[in-house]
Amino acid sequence: MVKEITLRKAGGSIAATLPKEMADRLHLEAGDRALVVETENGVLLTPYDPKVEKQLSTARRLAKKYQNALRELAK
Image 1 (tube, rainbow, N blue to C red):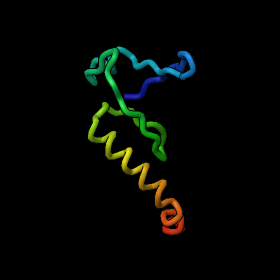
Image 2: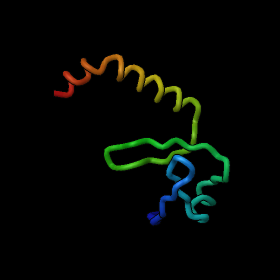
Image 3: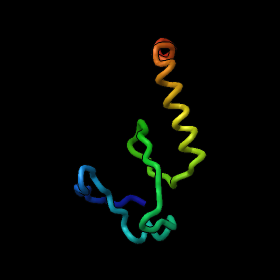
Image 4: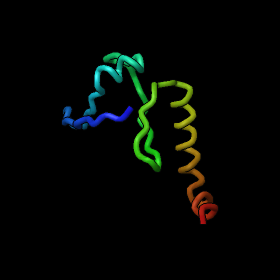
């Protein structure tokens, strides 16, 4: 399903509001946590999972630690 949304200013951040029918179908409610992941195709919004968050945190830490080696491998 593709829906157009409008981004709004919320304090110092930008907020996106999901259409009700989409939130209902995905079983999302106000106060639920979600992860936003930047991908080469755009932004992925996925339900929050502490295990995934820990894995992403580890990946970010390792990518920073080995950034020079990763840069060389990318050539």
